Amino acid sequence: MNILAINGSPRKKWNTAMLLGSALEGAAAAGATTRLVHLYDYDYKGCISCFECKRIGGKNYGRCAVKDGLKPLLEEAAAADALIIGTPVYFGAETGETRSFMERMLFPYLTYTPGYASIFPRKIPTALIYDMNVPEADIIGRQYDSLIERARGFMERTFGACEVLTATDTYQFDDYSKYLCTVWDADAKARRRKEIFPQDLAKAHALGQRLATAVV
Ligand SMILES: Cc1cc2nc3c(=O)[nH]c(=O)nc-3n(C[C@H](O)[C@H](O)[C@H](O)COP(=O)(O)O)c2cc1C
Image (cartoon, rainbow, N blue to C red; front, side, top):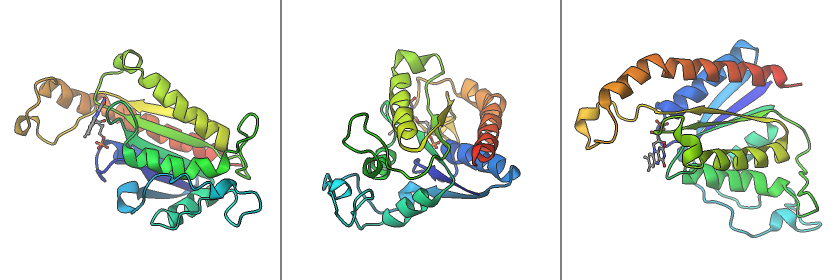
């Protein structure tokens, strides 16, 4: 059982990567083989709207025809038994690289037929992890809930059940005194990092375990 985690943050060791790492530890504890990849290691762009994935009888029907650095990762994702995508919230959305990746991964499977049926040949469990600076109470106020639900819906339609984990009020710098940042209380951020983030990591661990258990 192979579980692939995809880090949509440019930072390879920070919040998103840590949450994904913890999810994979949970999955490994449940017997999965795991791999963490970082989208910023890949050279690619978003969907170029060539529609080759939808050309009737075309040699690339149902898969992305673009031959760039993302091709091997798209193939790896298609072969995985479960997928976890993690992204920080940037300007109220996924990072650009995460969105571009999702366009390339999802569009070939979703058909322009009534109900936009998926032609992905299996059902696999998936998860989305979003982490962000704002406190949990702001998720609804800033309408991040609709953003997240939209992405979750596309994942679910394409692959099957998709669960979401959010981590809020994250620790953003190694030393808050070095950066101009007067909107956040550095002590409160440090406290939260120590007391709450471990709970977020534990939730990610449990998520990974659930995902591995859900693989049939
Ligand atoms: C360019 C940029 C834009 C950001 N925009 C938002 C935002 O709109 N809302 C938010 O809550 N956090 C925002 N953040 C903060 C990150 O989402 C947050 O620090 C996240 O945990 C970083 O993940 P990482 O540690 O894995 O890189 C932004 C950070 C950057 C660098």
